[in-house]
Length: 105
Image (tube, rainbow, N blue to C red):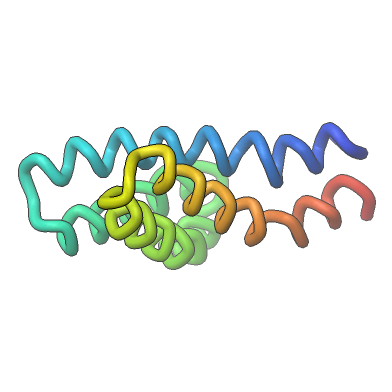
């Protein structure tokens, strides 16, 4: 996939959908575990999920998802959609450079 649709998928769609999935996972984890443990397990789960295509990718991706998970837990206090918006926007900004390279490079 190339062009504007590739950019949309990488920099808009994927961050929003992954944030919704992450919010569901974190909401479940937070029912049973402390926030710090929930954040660490969420980041680990995303690292494992991204490792299915390439092991190295999972090792790299856990760090951004540690940040995204932390953002969600902190901003969730202001509201679900506020937290989703903050995380999805942060994730989209992170994906913007690679998205431009994939789409138009």
